Amino acid sequence: MIEHRPFETLGAANHGWLDAHHHFSFAEYHDPARVHWGNLRVWNDDTIAPGTGFPPHPHRDMEIITYVREGAITHQDNLGNKGRTEAGDVQVMSAGTGIRHSEYNLEDITTKIFQIWIIPTHQGDAPQWGAKPFPKGERSGHFVTLASGYAQDTDALPIRTNARVVGATLKAGQTADYPLGGTRKAYLVPATGSVRIDEQTIKARDGVAISDVEVLRVTAIEDSEIVLVDAA
Image 1 (cartoon, rainbow, N blue to C red):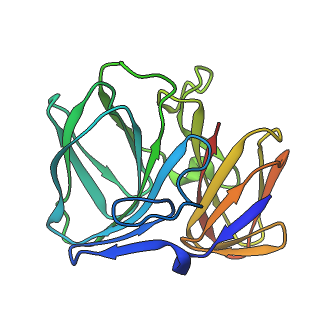
Image 2 (image 1 turned 180 degrees about the vertical axis):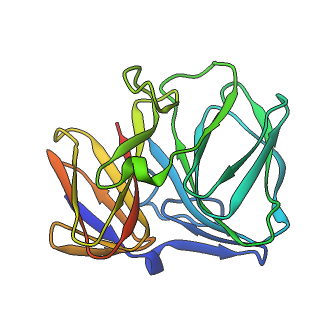
């Protein structure tokens, strides 16, 4: 099954400093058909104005992955972690038993992020945070794992759930395959460009919910940057 979810059909809330679009039910947006996809619970497409951001607020029992599309985001939390994650890079926060954090755009330009929440496999672990640069050249023409709950993915940021977050950059005309094995679910969003999946054209910031597929084949119509969650 390949379900195309065009960007214009997503839930949306414009707060002035934050222009948010929701692939799944979130905050004031609720769609009973779009509550989660496997253990993937949230995929927010956020545009954050310069000098603004999310003030300190708490989370618990959620794996929160931030993929920066443009600009940079600066994280600070009550564990003493502080870091700046810039375009193309990824940060992971395992909220565990509880963490309080802020996320600000301290840049002079607009910051655009995907924020992805995945339900953890189990609860009660201590909170943690980490970030890592992933140069686009390393994922040119194929998918690479950015964050993973599987021990064999030693180069990825660790998350505490049966899922992977992967990314690829494809030149126009290039094709990349991703094995799903027929039993898992995937959710894919092009950060830029446009791609073709099963004869459907998927534009930048559209979502695609995928299931019952052995191998997912993605072909770039134009130069594209792709993010995919492989979910249980």
